[in-house]
Every structure is written in C-alpha cells, then in structure tokens.
Image (cartoon, rainbow, N blue to C red; front, top):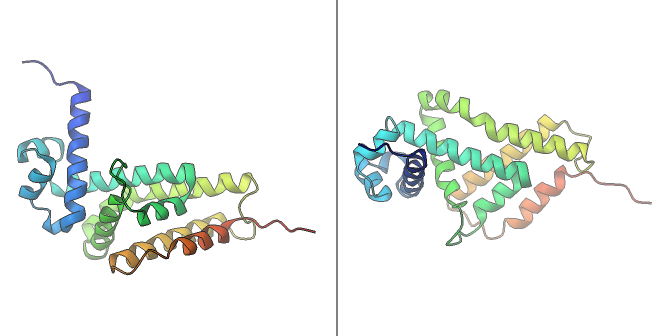
Length: 196
C-alpha cells in the first residue's frame, strides 16, 4: 500500500480547517455538529478525526491557525490592520480574513463559559500579544511610536480595542462607519513630532 505524502496530509488538514472555519462561523461551536462538519469539509467523520482527536481539538487548531495568521498580519502591518480586516467585506479570492471574526467570536464566548477551554486556550493566546508587543517595540526603535506610554500599556490598549470591536460586531451593531475610529486608534499610539 503506497504511503500518503506529507503534502497530501497537509492539504487534507488545510481542507478540514477551511471547511471547519466556515462551519463554526455559521453555526457556532455547539451548532457545528459532526454532520455539518462533514458537509462543510466534504470529508467523512473518520477522515476529519484522523487529523484531529475530537471537535474541541479541531476548534483549538482552527483558533490557533487563525491566531498565527493574525500574528503574521500584526508583525507586518500592526494590530489595527487585523481590526480593519475584520471590518472588510470578504473578497471572493481572499484568504478569509472576515472568517476570523466567526472564530474570534466563538473563542470569546467559550472563554467566558468554559473553564477547561480557557486553560487550554491560554497557552495559545500569547502569540497575538507577543506579535503586537514586538511590532510596537520595532516601531518605537524606528521612532514612530509615542514614548510617553509603556509598550505593555499600548499592547493592552490595542488588545482591548480589538475585543471591543469584536463585541460590537457580535452584537450586530453597524460597522460601516468605524474606519475613522480605527484611524484614531492608530494615531493615538504614534509619536507626534513637534514642529517649530
């Protein structure tokens, strides 16, 4: 019997994560039944759970995958860009930035209601914080970041704004006028050079 290549296994794992992301975003964690996961991924229960121990492990892997992708955006463009991506309408060929919202909402809900998930997620949640802090340190070293506020305080500030945005979107409140708010957030962490 021929061995399955690592590329094939990686592609299958990506297929599962992409389908699961859409399923969790649409139905939430509880509503993402095994049958719905099978439909969303186009794979059988056996194929899905060959790669992931159970639904919780699948969701954690998905949330971790999204956190890594967000951390990559943070490293290149900052946390405010992640917030802009959450507001953006999904483009047909986009790498699903808007789908981050569904995962993020479900992570937030489960953090409030599931102590076991909270402890498992704590290990994984540092990535976004670390990426934000490192980006701010690079911006400070380049002279672009305000120097009257500690980097850890600015990191917490940006994370609180992100959580507030996620809550705003979760409540279904209008988001089409929030770009100027994000401009203000971005401007508030920048260094202002005195003229004259």
